Amino acid sequence: MTIDIIDLTDPQYADLSPVQLSMVRVAQGKKNDILAKADAERKELLYLLLRNENARSSVRAREEARIKAQADADVEVVKEDLLHQLAYESIGSEGNENGPYRYPENPNYNLSYSQRFLVVRNYYMEVTDDAAARLEAFRMDTLARAYLGEFYQTLYDLLASYVN
Image (tube, rainbow, N blue to C red; front, side, top):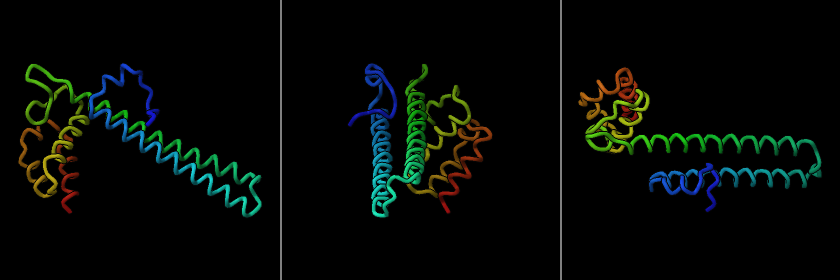
């Protein structure tokens, strides 16, 4: 598989963790799927226009431009998501004198509140698949109240929405 979703040098790829490499491969697969679907849609359009003897019409150029623009936008979303995931993953690999940052054992207070929200959300989403138990565990977590600040209620509401 050729990786072209993001531009990294060989040393930068070598520095990626196995989790980050997996993220890159998944994103590349999504990009390849998007481009393949766009190509199939363009071919289908061409065949339709050929059957109707309109292959040289301006409709073809306009529709192909629309298909390409949509595919480019979808690829850009995947790329931005990958970059955020890679940045988030690298944040979690740091640490302090107490060891690597990991919620709740060694929370990272250098993170912004929105980044803390992501850390705590991911922690609770990985703890259990039972939404009600997850919500109850979060409700009992006194560290989360102080650590998340005003984002505590937002995360509580999000976890509660999975119960319903």
